[in-house]
Length: 236
Image 1 (cartoon, rainbow, N blue to C red):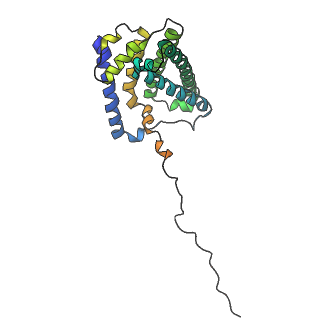
Image 2 (cartoon, rainbow, N blue to C red; image 1 turned 90 degrees about the vertical axis):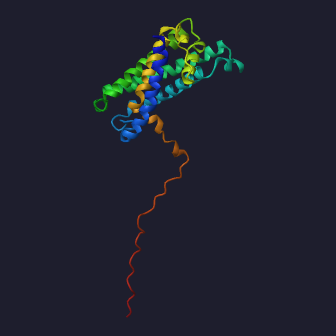
Image 3 (tube, rainbow, N blue to C red; image 1 turned 30 degrees about the vertical axis):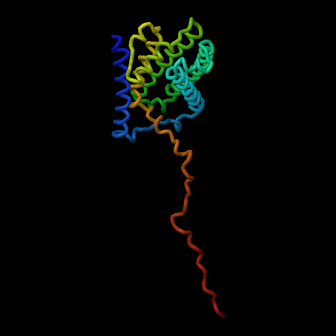
């Protein structure tokens, strides 16, 4: 069971993630879109979308540092466990509150606006459900365990296991004594990764970065403007 949870499931999710994106690009390029509903309702979207996206970016940055940067590296530059715990908990809590508030506004917008609700597909509902569970478990670990509870240093176990998965040297024994809330958070996150290629989240890979360096669009008339016709001069 340990191998199935912490070795098999991660590699299945990663395989589906890669193969699913290739299939989606080859078979459904017209569906490679955000399915935006801004024209249907913009008041709640104007507030909820920035909150959600900024919070997600901050949370992703925290996960990258916490999972991919070894503990020895941060200690080598003078960041001890107490300072790291203080920064990660405070920043993680702020990012989590932003994500929760933004997602709540976006979901309320979809439920309260009939036109937006009619554009919500079954895959959207599944995506929002899994996303909400991942966020709730993440907040339970950050606030409930690290802020209000006794704390847990995941960099000695979860981070080492995760880097092992990425380097094809997974050690499932590292996850044996991890608190349940972190185990559930990791498992549901792998489900989220496997769902990604089949949802509107594929738009993440189509960010219009080329707009930063492409030349301005120059508009020209299709035909030259005709000059006014001059009447020939009359002689007396």
